[in-house]
Amino acid sequence: MAEKSETAYTPEVNRPPADDSYRDKNMSPGRYVATRFSTLKPTLTKVQNPFALLRLLNFQQWMFFLVAFCAWSWDAFDFFTVSLTVEELAETFDKTKTDITWGITLVLMLRSVGSIIFGLAADRYGRKWPFVINNVLFIVLELGTGFCTTYESFLGVRALFGIAMGGLYGNAAATALEDCPEEARGIISGMLQQGYAFGYLLATVFSRAFVNTVGHSWRPLFWFGAGPPVLIIIFRLCLPETQAYQERQRIREATPNAAKVFLQEGKVALKRHWLLLIYMVLLMAGFNFMSHGSQDLYPTMLSNQYNFSPDAVTVTQVVANLGAMSGGTIIGYCSSIFGRRFSIIFISVIGGALLYPYTFVDSTKIIAPAFFEQFCVQGAWGVIPIHLMELSPGSFRTFVVGTSYQLGNLVSSASSTIESTIGERFPLPPKGSVKRYEYGKVICIFMGCVYAYVILLTLIGPEYRGRLFDVAHDSDMAEAAGQDREGIRRKLEGSPIRGNSADIENGQARHVNDVRV
Image (tube, rainbow, N blue to C red; front, side, top):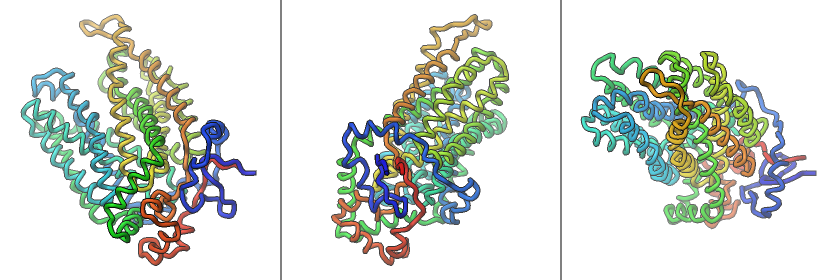
């Protein structure tokens, strides 16, 4: 007896039906709620070992992943250049540190603008050129930051950088994952997400190398940051569009007005998925609170509350980021075995259990809980790129993935301010003239609430693991183009992009979540 929730079951091939129209279409709210626990049971899907999974990617798929990973890592590097040079920037512009942090806040506030602009461009015109333009802006704006001579110009340039930065995440996820073999999506998702932690490590290393060592104070770090995007642009120019996008564009161009079809796709997506889109923003708000809440004020806690030296703080942060990269990759892989929702909830429970040692150990032994706490935080994050891709409407993957992420980031941007403000209500004996506060208690309580929120949102939300990304299985496109499934297949048949109808039908190996036999 099969129990169905979001995903129907086709016994002969154990894969979704011909298109994605089955998703929640005929399910009552009561039935949906009733399946939240039954569908959470680990699927225990048999997958190959990680090395065998990585060998499933062909050369072009690896190149798509690598260019996306490089760009996402350098996106993070560029963001952290300000965070790591706050004191030097404040001295140059004769402002307080709080004034300088507005440069960070503006980036966070305007990311969603970039995700909308570049996301829509990537979904309409392809992943390649919006990606290239994004990186051109990184070059110009990092150089521009390095040449700023006034505080006002600094804020202006960083505001523009926020728009550029916001446009990259969704495009990187689509580029890396759209053509990825289904079995390997989990581990590739985890590896891609950890580009952010890797970018932070690079920023830490190069800030030590360039800031106040080669002259011009903080400026060489930003000048250096403008260099690698040149190589990333060249790399991307050598690659084509993803196959998934080429198929979708082929269907649009087969109609008299491709732009009209694209607009119709948007109307269909909003009509069918508006509630899901709201859910994704709420989920990403929780995830970003989890990331910022556990990380942003943590160095201050170590130095202010526990009197760690700058070197000890740096070592702890580096070890924590190594834990983050390990966790994202491992839990991303595990999500293909146990399911996306189960993996997120399980590792969040473990992370919650580790909060006490993460925030209350007052010696260098805190390095161990720092490693494992960030293993959990970024382990949950490792599932997110592919989870968002599978939830998103096919015609607007870049836009929806990027915008939900960045709106969630906007909501959570005040995490460190909230923690710092509450922390000042718990003073400790001062160290000389330096006021001290019990930040650890606040971080622990704050993160406990965040974990509870993420677990609840993940529990009540859907999961479409194993969803097909090719256009032949996208019911939204079929409705927007006024075609049935067979009509779309006929247009694709014989295409050099995908091949014949048998290829379209069998495509990649597929597994289904939320199915019980």
